[in-house]
Image (cartoon, rainbow, N blue to C red; front, side, top):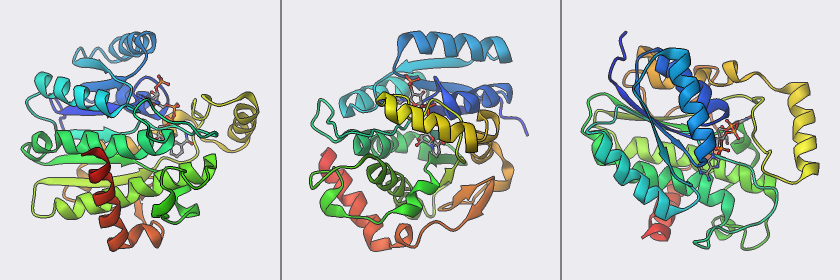
Length: 280
Ligand SMILES: NC(=O)c1ccc[n+]([C@@H]2O[C@H](COP(=O)([O-])OP(=O)(O)OC[C@H]3O[C@@H](n4cnc5c(N)ncnc54)[C@H](OP(=O)(O)O)[C@@H]3O)[C@@H](O)[C@H]2O)c1
């Protein structure tokens, strides 16, 4: 199937799973709108993708997605550049071992991993919905299996621990996807999410040395390579097998059950309303 000219927006495309997905999707002929936050890494990734694929339809946008102001500006720039969006792949995410806040006063993990997906999708949604057979794909994680929703501590205000906060943010990705898919019922747009596997990327390397070393050791022992790690993202973006499939959680290119907590509809709605209120 030809993907020539189809517009795919990918966040976190300067490294790891996002860059690997971008490389493969460029090979398939997609027109890519890629998001990075670091000028040097943007330039390197752009050259690497164009040189490897000969696809000149690669445009990078710069934004720090932890800043909701920058997410808003980014959405405007993307809508100026593209009059349609076939696929949005929300991928940028990180692990923060220690508590910290963004300049806007949001907790780092919740801001980047959940709120940026939520806001960016919301701002692009009219353009996406106006594009036939469009897709929204959210990179979540099996880490969501390790936690429950606690609405009184979504931003670590009653005590912060890095791993539980990360797990909660990935649970938010799954619950946001399900609520979004329900709201998209009857439209020509689907929304799905995925677990990429435990992947040997730069994930976690933004933290202090002790955290980096233990993550590196775990990656050496148990992680899959980037090529394998990007497969499910690429599948959900490009495969005809998932035409019309929506509201599902995927791993290894197959739909599978997410946690019982992620399926609680009342909590999915509550998370949506909470996020909307926070960003209003
Ligand atoms: N690796 C795993 O084992 C694993 C497992 C399950 C789920 N995931 C999920 O997979 C996704 C991708 O992770 P990865 O493993 O590919 O990590 P990675 O190698 O660290 O790549 C993350 C990407 O996100 C970008 N990014 C990080 N913070 C950003 C910010 N504030 N604003 C804009 N861009 C930002 C990074 O930009 P820079 O290049 O500038 O750093 C990079 O391009 C994440 O959502 C993660 O939660 C990963």
